[in-house]
Length: 580
Image (cartoon, rainbow, N blue to C red; front, side, top):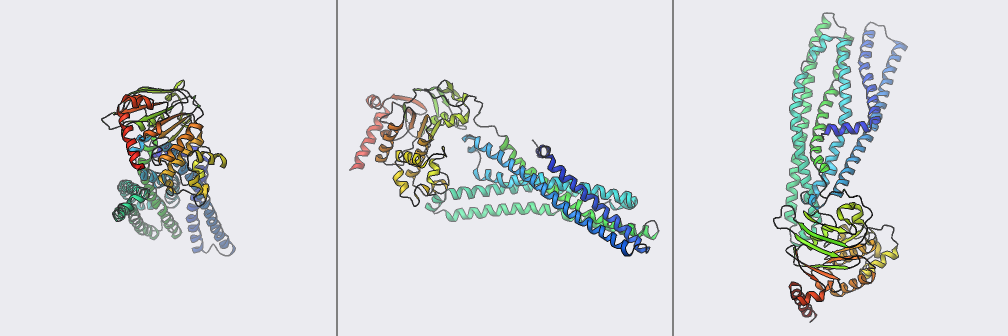
């Protein structure tokens, strides 16, 4: 979709606001072209000594009244216009946010967060200006130009009008040449701002790492370079936009010279009165706005086109995971994984190869294996963050793809490896899935997650803000708050992706004991490197190189003497050495 189709569709939906603005601009244009004619007639009447006294005051009063009406109409059309244009900005930002919130990991692997934030700010602003200021300025300028030229041609003298308009084709050619450079310069300026935004976002998110590695100076230098690039790109765009003014000035100067020369000659020959030449001069002065409006509109349109060229691909990007399911809510039951094959984009080696397993409802499944074996990948496929190339997963009576994404994810409580907390209080982070939960319910799940005592020691207890990404809490505290959040959601399926890696063994045992007593038929899948976490699992599957190589209970796997048994002995030895 082009920018013009986008704006056209918006104008059709909000035609009342644009029509009202257009009518007010029409009234302004009519009054503006009436004024010079009226002034010209007054000049001729004054020279002929036919206008004086009360009649003169009445004519001056009419001019003053016209000025007041023009002022009121200008205020009115701006209020109408800006209200409509701001609605377009809201619509675009809402569309962009909704699209981003539905995209999966594949999309974000190829996009940078800072650049996406820039799209929602600078780029949307540019499109908004094209739909608002550019549309109405273009209409106003065109209408004024037509009416003024008509009055110059039909109301004053057509010969003088033709002579004065001779330089205007040259101005149109200059505008066309300048607008091409404005488009490219605006695109580069928006891209440079996105890169600057990327650096700021990454630096602030990783400020602890930068300080730990002593990279503050290097990061500052890089910021300075990007800021200079962004400033230079913006300056270049402004420089090209400023080129419109000299083109207008040259054209207007040439037109004034032609008007005075040829118009004076017509007055000398008696073919034009002084009042008519005065009116013509005022009309010529009124052409300043249409000429400046043309340059301004072209600059706004080219800036908007450059912004839309960056925005439109993101809005049109297909969802990385299709949401064509119709079943809602989830109907919990056994989980069946059959012949699952999956490879990440650009990866030669498959992450999962022919994985099959059966997990009855209400049981606990443990997933173990070396790093990169496919444990987290299997959980992500259960969440439908990715779609397998072969095989499938069924939950209850339906394949996962038959559920709507909203219903599926509402039926799953997930605690990832890196727990994410929002810039809110501890209580608000725990109650994220159930905002209406009582304080007693929040404290109950916090106790089950073994984090209640830690929260009580915070300055404001459960009302303590955790900062961006939970920066005020330790890694173990963040993990336990995330576990409490998952427990409060009370979803039929609980996924723990190495969610106890940052807690000590005593705290781990406390959390696992709470999970056993509070499970109440809930199906649990735990991916972990620490095998002690899975002692009470109903079944354990060992993944190696994306394949299920061993399966059984803890005792059965130890008895088999395979990879699991070896890892169990190593971890037990490490635990005994730590105890000493």
